Image (cartoon, rainbow, N blue to C red; front, side, top):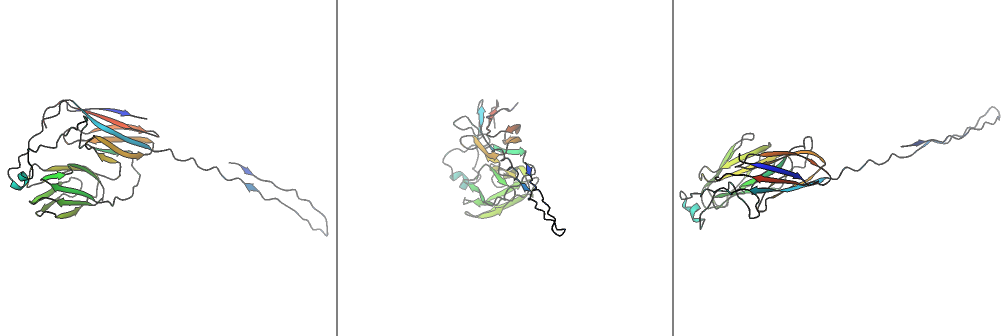
Length: 264
């Protein structure tokens, strides 16, 4: 069994007055005086419950897998960009015992909600013959700038299943091309057909509540309205794990990611 996750969730009145009418008989003429009804305003609606802030870390336990050494000898430019050995990024364990490159996002619980479009451009680079970042998240329709920062031919082959697949050749240093995904998809694998060791993964979601763990293994999904949500943590080597959580006025989620295997 590859993995085990342990979760912790760190916690009208209407008033009227009518005046009396007094009649006086003066040539069969009546005078009536009526006071107008008055109404008190309704009480103001209750303020919405405060959002909870969902954060956490992906912890790693067990023996770190032995990472494969990458052979770049087929391209002298790539080999010359590295002074020493280069290893696979499949499983990266941080110094504090956390796991890097885990895509964490709200999988369920936001149905029916709308969010402003994401207009900020994100960069996907080919640098030292590696994709940077190795794992990333974007919003549906968010602009992506694909860049070649190396002096050798690269290509970006997005092997999407839900979105249209694309394959861009990029032969020049500094070359940049636009891209975007118009439908949610977890995950889009990207590979370079020129350099078989190059691969990356992109998570595409409709909302801003996602994160990728970095050098400290932490994630921040932002503020979520109190309620029930399904959170998923995706990793390229380990099976994706989901958990249903209830977000109170203040909430925190902590993942524990454990494995006992020895190769990646």
